[in-house]
Length: 133
Ligand code: CTP
Image (cartoon, rainbow, N blue to C red; front, side, top):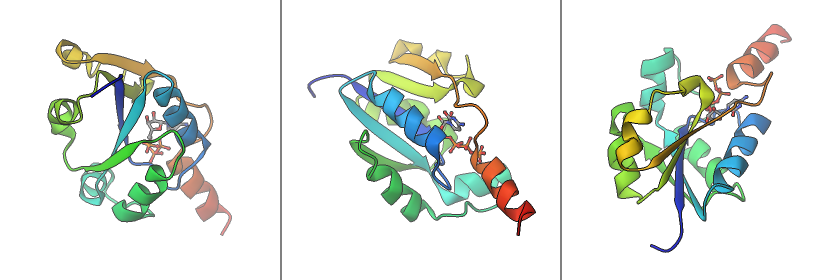
C-alpha cells in the first residue's frame, strides 16, 4: 500500500469538536487515516453504561468525517497490535491521557500521543444536558 497509514481508536459517542480535531490532527500525520470505533460491548464493560449512539451510528458518523478514509469496529482493547498489522498502519495515534501506555508497539509502528482539546468530553456533555433537563 502506497503512503503512510495512520490508525487511531475511540468511542466517538455524542460526536464533538475534540473528536473532529483529533481526527484532523491524526490525518495530517500521514496519507490515509483508519479509525477503530469501539464496540458497544467494550464501552459497557469499561463504563457500565451503553453509549448514547449505537456502534453502527458512531461508525457511520466517523466514516463521514472528511479526514477519515476507513473505519472498523474495535472489538477488544487487547488487539491493538493485530489491528495495526491488519491495517498496515505505520503510525498509531492515541490521546495523551494514554501517554506511554502503547510504547510497547514501537516495534511495529510509531506511537504518537496527541494532547486532548481542553474543556470538552462526551461525559461532560451528557452531565451538562442531564443537569439542565
Ligand atoms: N479527544 C480529544 N479531546 C477531547 C476529547 C477526546 O482529543 N476533549 C480524543 C481522545 O483523546 C481520543 C478520541 O478523541 O483520541 C476519542 O475519545 P473518546 O473517549 O471517544 O471521547 P471523550 O469525549 O473523551 O469521551 P468520554 O468523556 O466518554 O471519555
